[in-house]
Amino acid sequence: MESQQREGSIPSAGAPTQGKGPAGPNRSDGSLGPFLAGLLAATCRLGPAQAGAVLRRGDGNRIDVLAVHPNLDSESPPAWLSRAAQFAHDSLQANRPVSGAGAERDGQHILSIPLRLAELPLAAAFLIQAWDEAALRAARERLELGVSLLVLAESRQAAQKKELDLRRLHQAMETLSAVNRHRRFGSTAMALCNEAAAQWRCERVSLGLLKGRYVQVKALSHAENFSRKMQVVQDLEAAMEECLDQDGEVLHPAPQDATYISRQTAALSQRHGPLAVASLPIRYAGKIWGVLTLERPADRPFAVDEIEAVRLALELCTARLGALREHDRWLGAKLAGGL
Image 1 (cartoon, rainbow, N blue to C red):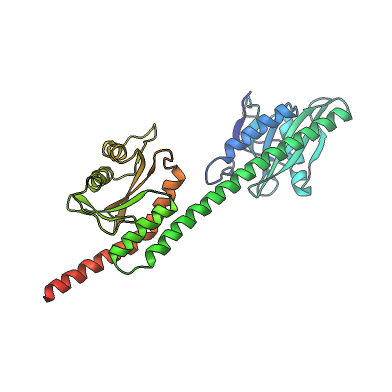
Image 2 (image 1 turned 30 degrees about the vertical axis):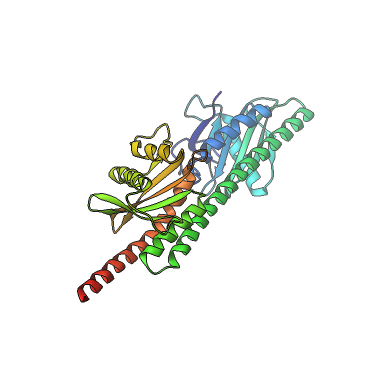
């Protein structure tokens, strides 16, 4: 039987009422709701338990129902769920598991276990069928262990995501730091490419800027001098224009659900690799300004979190690049006018 994500309210005392409660808890990645439903299904099988629910302490004496297993056949909550609301309230108050007799017939028991998850006042309540103390104790131990293991797994997943977010921010800040050490556009553009190549382990990173209707490569990582007549530069500019024309990121190999065109990007990869390629548009002053293209061995395609990190780095660095570009062009025009 399937678990059901629900949103309703049950007072801790009195007849249950069902309706739209406040929004349920959601992590930034939106995975907590499905996790709660999965937790109930897995733990009910382990117990075994006849039914389960995840409850949250709301304002006043209200208890919100966030997930139920198995699915409810009607909008009216079963009697055991109304009884479970009081057990959930008590277990959250005491910060320990609380159990007691069910409300429907002999042999039924309700166990409420606090969920130490996302710093929210949550409890998992289970309906257990046990005819003697030994069976009840065994079911309780299995349910408590199952909940603890599943919450631990979720906590580790959340910690890994936090670590990933911190690494992404660190990469972006390191790139910004490298860019800020220079005062001329040329050296700043080179620093951006070199640092991006180091942070994302690329063989080559290139910066191209829009000039008229075309993109011109202005900087290559670890290359002080290059010619636009070089085949690799021409292929880079073609891939950059493909990205710019679509005003969106272009990857090779492209994801299966990709809707963009990546013909020129694939050609760049095949002629000079094979390579994994990622091109990201750069916006300055509200307009498309240029493209950053990253290349590395084909066996290490760019992951979504890496693209997000590069995107963040560009957002942080573009203002500096744009201002230096305008300053250098103004300085060049002033010097030319004085000659």
